[in-house]
Length: 274
Image 1: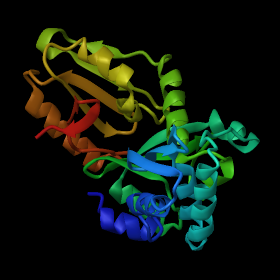
Image 2: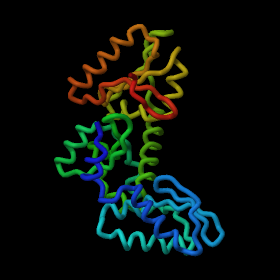
Image 3: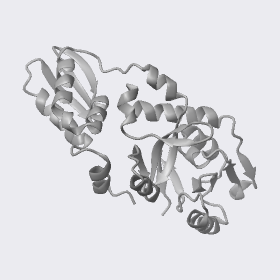
Image 4: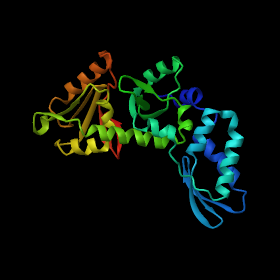
């Protein structure tokens, strides 16, 4: 399972995103022309000289993550730009344009992340459920290169934009992948079996959830035992227990094994089937 404390200590600088945001708020509060109206995470809603604005702090935070000793100048520059009323929109750089079409999400387990870390790779990870998370990778046709946290600021975008681009690329590529269907009624089994390395990762796509949910008779259950296989079936499937057992076994024994648990889609998020 992802250990948030370990993740913060090993992959992130001393200040978490929440503390970074709190520091910016503390610096803004005494300023006469700035009123804090609220916010969440790295997004702040402000009124600057009477004009409402939304400040996105993620780009500044990514710069700080790469070089933690630059905290003061990074925050100073951010404060000055907000007081001047500058928008926090991001412009794509030439460097980002060169890699944007190659960006894809990759599902990784906590164990796989730790193995990469031991190899000296500082991956960008977003936890999804239990010990399953999303990494960013560059698909260079013949190889997959995982994106490290130092790369994001050099592209002139923030991590959120990079993740959005990766998911858009995955969605676009998924349109050419046909779902295999077996059985009918409660026994229907939906399958994405593809050696492109993204079959299981397509479990992240809301369009795939909606399409597959419409084909089953009860609540949709997803299984992603290996990188090259994504299964969908009804919670009412008569072989539910056998499918659960097979998923667990395949995830533990296959060379490209991924996740041993079944998943529900609820409130636009993945949850483990108890």
